[in-house]
Image 1: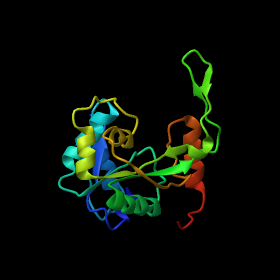
Image 2: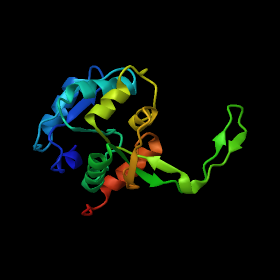
Image 3: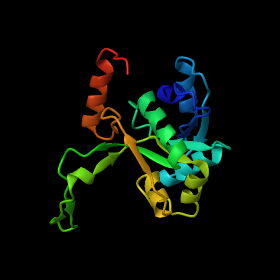
Length: 193
């Protein structure tokens, strides 16, 4: 949240939390150092898409909407500024990093079906930023589990999504190993970014 609020273009933050976590979120915010803006806390849904739509409903009349996963706590203001700037120009933008591993497309039975050229494969990150009308149209009437990220829904509208360079430290914390990596990052001396 601090990285988002360090960016001048960010004028409102909607924090979407799981049902039952509203008071816990309010308490965490109250215990933290003062924030320049107090976030609006909204109850999310059972699926990711439900939570995004709850956030969109609370976003108001913002011309651009950034959707960021709390599971990516190391995003930088630099990445946020870059993706906002690109979305302002292109309508939709996502930070990505190039894939460094060879990717295999695998059949359900376990056989490799294809090895796509690595030069064309990038790993999507957040925040993903969209002009408000585009992201609202992308979420209108879709199933809650219709996509693994919001850019996919925008692509299904036939809209192109621009890619800006992401940051390898903007890593999604999902596994115990990721958590250990995050603890290691937090224990290091702060490096200006």
